Length: 98
Image 1 (tube, rainbow, N blue to C red):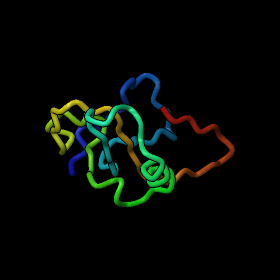
Image 2 (cartoon, rainbow, N blue to C red; image 1 turned 60 degrees about the vertical axis):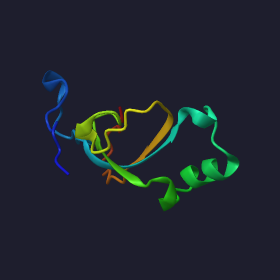
Image 3 (cartoon, rainbow, N blue to C red; image 1 turned 45 degrees about the vertical axis):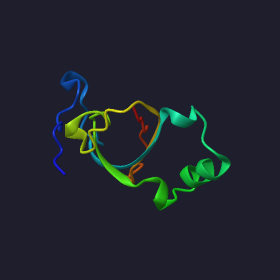
Image 4 (cartoon, one colour; image 1 turned 90 degrees about the vertical axis):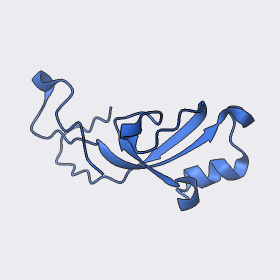
């Protein structure tokens, strides 16, 4: 999967420790038919990172509707969850995720 947006979104604010999280993420979603709630089993699956609940790969920063995301689902999606493992080296500085 290609990482289409590798540049800092606001170059004048880029710092030497900046890490781009764009690229392939694990992804799951639920369509509108059942409303905005996950069942208790689904909540546990997402919370404990059950592999079956992340059946897709999505190319961030693109939305699920975009073909560039690798999914291109144009149906209405009520809920979506993303997962990505990253290495964060804490060297006494602050960690800011946005």
